[in-house]
Amino acid sequence: MSGLNRELLQKMLSAATESIESNVAYLNQLDSATGDGDHGTSIVKAIRAAYKSVMEAPSGQSLKEILHNAGWAVMGEDCGSTSSLIGAFFMGMSDVAVNDELDDAAAIALFPAGLAGISKQTKAKIGDKTLMDALIPAVEAMQNAENLKTALINAASAAAQGAESTKSYVAKFGRAKNLGERSVGHVDAGATSIALIFDAFAKSL
Figure (tube, rainbow, N blue to C red):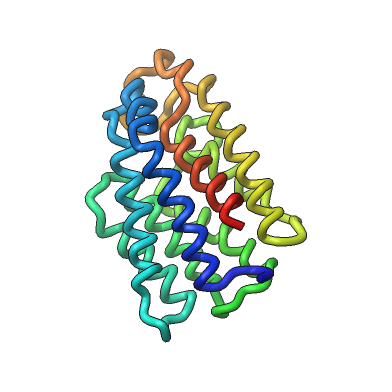
């Protein structure tokens, strides 16, 4: 189909969950260089919670409710700032999910709304060595695409480049902030997980 509905959302989250599950050790390894070494463990909890919530949503539940409840499910997980940020993303998306069958333009509009949700939880911006280094370029790259598939392909490419760029940044948030210049040379785990998620979203279509 064109656009987005419950079934396609399930497919996208299934692919994202599988990708994150396959990369837990890698993400923890990246995080161990500058943080607590547990980002993989945290993000897999978050994405699993969202996927489980969407898969178990009652048949009569609207797409708006499905996304909102997925956000709450993520926020209920004990995975530090990851739960509040990823949860806020889904809840932000729910704010603009006006129908259960979204056309391409409405489906693409979910993502800047999700970014706006996260932006209420953090002041991080591009260059601060966080997941925002991948998420902001990804969302920007989706705009003006002719359909959701093309938008997600563009997003996946931009997120990957954004994640790679964090290697040259000095960390401004979290435990990594304490390292100062020593954080340079390491790719941010949060940005990498966002890149993996968008890559999975794109491939699922």
